[in-house]
Length: 217
Image 1 (cartoon, rainbow, N blue to C red):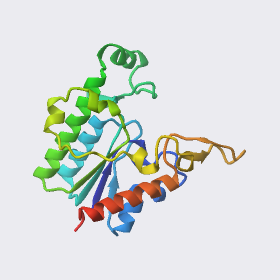
Image 2 (image 1 turned 45 degrees about the vertical axis):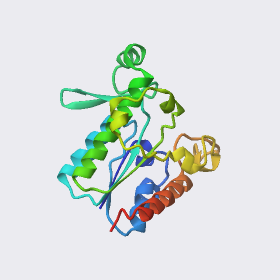
Image 3 (image 1 turned 30 degrees about the horizontal axis):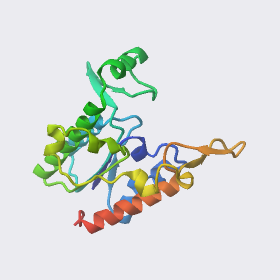
C-alpha cells in the first residue's frame, strides 16, 4: 500500500475527475497496488508530518510519497482542533490573528528551518520504521542557499528534494495549468494547480523515481 500526503496538489484540486486523474491514483494503478491519499487544501508541512505519522502508526505502509507544501504555512492546536494559518489564502483562523502572525512572528529564516524540521522528523521516522519514502515539494526558494543553516537543516539528509514546478517545466506552464472556468462559456484561464496532463506528467516522474530506487519490492 502506498501512502500519499501533501496539500491541494496531492488532493487534486481543480481536476474534473479527481479520484481517477490525480497522480496518487495513476501511480498506484501502475504498480497495481492500493493507496491512501491524505492530501488536503491548505495543508501545512506541520500537518503533513502529523497526519503521515498518525496513519503509519495505525496502518501498514509499503511506501510513502510525501509532497511538501509552501514553507510559510503553519497549524496550531486549539482545543481538539488544528487550525491552519496561511498568508492571504483564506485563513481558517480569524483574519486578524493570521495577519498578526505574519506581521510580528513570521520570518523567512523560521519558515526554512520549519521545513527542514518536518523533513528531518519524517526522514528519521521512516528510517526507524523501515518505510521506503520519496519526497517532492512545491516550494522553490533559492534563498535556502543564502540563509544560515539551522540545526534541523544540518541534521537533515542533504539530498535535494525535487520541485514539482521543475518537473512540469517551470513557473509558466499553461499546458499544465489551463482549466475551464465554466462549461457554459467554455472560456479558459490560468489555474493554480496542475490539470490532468500535469498530474500524468508528475505521476510518470514518480513512477520513474520509484523504479530507479527500487522503493517497491
